[in-house]
Length: 264
Image 1 (tube, rainbow, N blue to C red):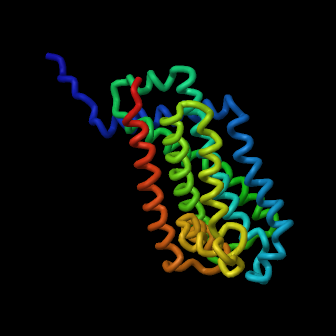
Image 2 (cartoon, one colour):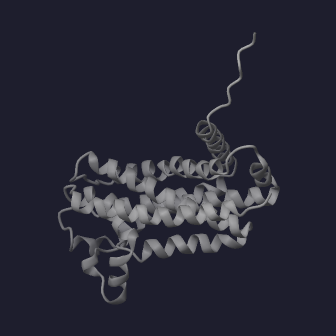
Image 3 (spheres, rainbow, N blue to C red):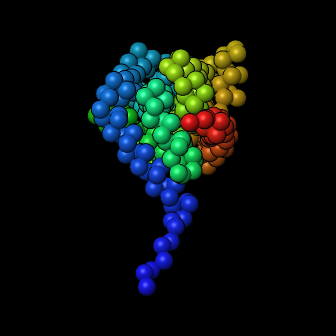
């Protein structure tokens, strides 16, 4: 008598399909350098340019630290954010070539599609992290918070990647064309640059200071940046975690609703 065939658990199957999509997306990135190179060149250029041009402004707040300590975490997180948005361009191309219709018709949960994009964004975010931190190390960057500084920066990088890709693919699911590309980038740009990105809160004034204070991106940035400026504290860690959970709930819900309404 032959052994009975057991159906695979839905959760395991979803993860298997999601991982297959991760591998496919990574191969697609390799075959399309134009979608990868800008997201790596921009954070490298930003690190060097900002530290050179605006470094004097940072020294008045942190006179004993290298200028790169302020700008390395910023550009790592920017690289993760914009890299995730560029990943959403691949979803638009899949709509235009008909591949996405096949994914929607596949006998698996649609959750696997979104999980696949999220995991790809997290893997891809490691590239600007390694590259920019290496440049910072060569340029004399220090770590007042010790090795844990890099761990928290990694956590913040993955957070930003998840939020960015959910925002990007959420728009891709709705527009299905490159008309969504400017909106993807503008959304990330506004969230980052209206935070405590370029100078500390003490150097801001007027409406910009108020917006930065209530912008959740400020807290995520502080979480990832704190070990580069001083010792790591729980007081600057938990607000970043809470801010991430709030942004994730909004962005993931936005992406999930868009995916659920798609018709193959």
